[in-house]
Image (cartoon, rainbow over all chains, first blue to last red; front, side, top):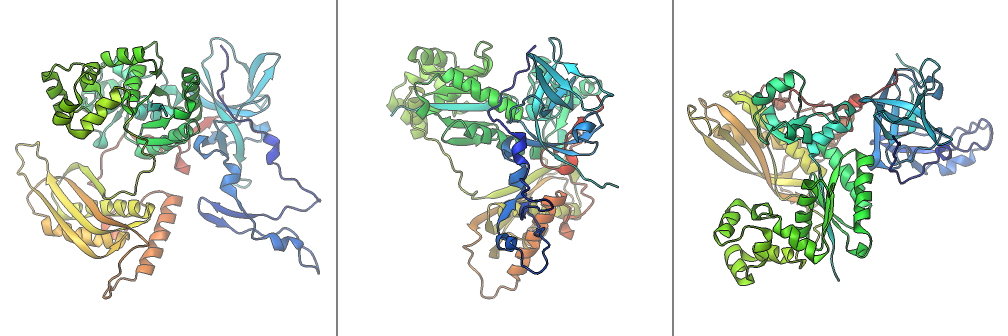
Length: 166
Length: 425
């Protein structure tokens, strides 16, 4: 069996990383309208004496929703249970943002359904063979072979992780 | 210029939505039940194969469900609405204009694609929509909307077509029309089908042979347009933008028969609040509210009663508080003790955009305050879920509530209902 993907969009997972020009400096951003909730944004500059040049740019708003969700019509969220992707920074309780339009490439975390259940694996393409790789040594690597029932559901584009939980 | 339309129809839409987030249901028989879990309103192919009919009462299939041979769901319109808009959005990428015809059907204008490999293009649409939304669709393509409907129906029925049928060749069109009986033609109701059959029309093809004058005489201009469309002459354009609704109605049958005024008031208040929310969503206000009550007219042992009351409000409004107030007044004036009520409903009319309201000199309502209350309520419900805040009249008990014991989670619209990824395998 082949793993067939019908995707039209190539997503470069790296491009979303903000460019940090100077150490200890974050880009000044305002966050606006994430599901109608306004988040105040402060410049991260703490300068003594001079007013920050970044203050001039405070009105520039960034819509967090647009930033996280590029294709609203094909984007879904799912909640993680279990630790098989721990070393890929996908942990129990995280919320995943999944784009079903993004094209999976070697190394991308994807959602697939195996034996009627959704699960997360890293998609690997090695020498014409396809693998689903967990990110935890306790779990096996699965090679996609003829008799498996497998559907590639979508590509994980963001992981929402809460650092402190009760 | 020649025209080309595609009719895209989601296969077994409600059942497919239930499956989208439960991969374990693939290949299993699934049905969706009507409001109140009364009867079957959608079936997966597997349940059709089990011989389950549309409208089968739930009690007849309860045994199958209880022993796990059939999966039954209460209707989850929040989920279906969201998936529907995703499907339509996906389709919009393939055509310059789209007419959303119903929750699971839309017309695409493909006139600019004439001369391209339509079959391949349609396969691409079908595969993409499946990958993007997990919903299988069928496409029928033809020079007119009525013919696209014919093509779509055959696309679904024929195993060879496998969900895509392009009718552009005149010979194929004739064959398709001959294979479509007159009852199955778009817009031909039971009455017209009877009339046409009396005049020797058995199939869509026979219909196209009728004289224009005859059709116009018996079926008016609508029938004439239809027959021309079937002959390949495009008369119906894409109707892209649906105008704001002229009337809004919320009405449901109760889970059990109600006799007490208080229960009816609660139900009516909730329906009024639902209408108000719909109004605010389309940024309009209503001037007239009608409330109706009815008993179960199918029941022979119950005394029958139906009544309605219409109130013209002093100023058009979209506030829960005002609409509930007037709906309750209307209800109280028509309620009669001693009947077992089956249904009540709220209808709003005289709907105007909220920036074109005529104010009343003697108006005592603080409209600005109402506006900001409603805005806050809408924000809270978006954030925390429906009915998290409501007007006291709407009650807490809700004994009148619909039965929906088998409802699936709102996978795509509620944070607490997100599908679970099992990372322990």
